[in-house]
Amino acid sequence: MALIIGMILTLAIIFATKDFIKKYPKISYFISFVFSIVVIYLYYTEINKELPEVFSKYVLNTFKRGIFATTIFMVVMFLGCVKNHTSLTRKFMEIRGEISIIGCIFALTHNIIYGRRYFVWLLFDWSQFKNINQLVAVILSVILVILMLILMVTSFRCVRAKMSAKIWKNIQKLAYPFFYIIYLHVMTLYVSKFDEKIFEIIVYTIIYLIYTIMRLNKTKIKKISR
Image 1 (cartoon, helix red, strand yellow):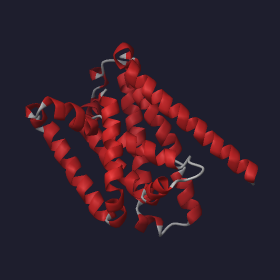
Image 2 (cartoon, one colour; image 1 turned 45 degrees about the horizontal axis):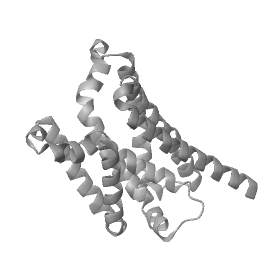
Image 3 (tube, rainbow, N blue to C red; image 1 turned 30 degrees about the vertical axis):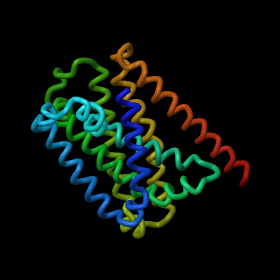
Image 4 (cartoon, rainbow, N blue to C red; image 1 turned 180 degrees about the vertical axis):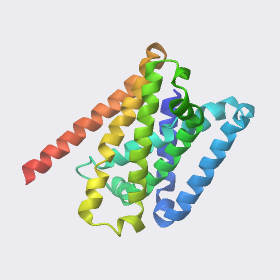
């Protein structure tokens, strides 16, 4: 349930702020950065435990677990699969780069919150990991962070303007392995808690299957039209 509520919250925020993001992208990045710092501070100081449980579970947890960031990435990737855009999806396409940067900011928030434990273990003491799944998930996280930083930096308009269209497009193709590695990362963690996480596994799998079908279909159409 927290997953679905988190996804709905993310979509609602994107929809409500799309015009503001388009008009004031730099301010949007700054607000996202400040908010992410606040979230990190609440968890590092454990003040989150003193907040109402409903707020902590269904709002703060959305940012801590990376649901907010992952949902943004889903929106970005699905927008690239749409064949015939509506007036609404066109508006989202106009800020696709901006919301992907915001997604990266909150993905870093997720990694910083968990990284102070798991990244330290990865560097200094593998024996702390409960099982191989946890270790693999952290290694995948490192790969994701590297890919994400490359995609994030090249998504800024000022950086993109200094690159050739061909090079920029080739770099942006890293988004595909990045997106699927997110799925592998999530499944690696959830498989070890299969009975507890069956709902989340089903939801993520359905979303990724739909995306894959749409992506393959669009690729097929492009090849036919050439």
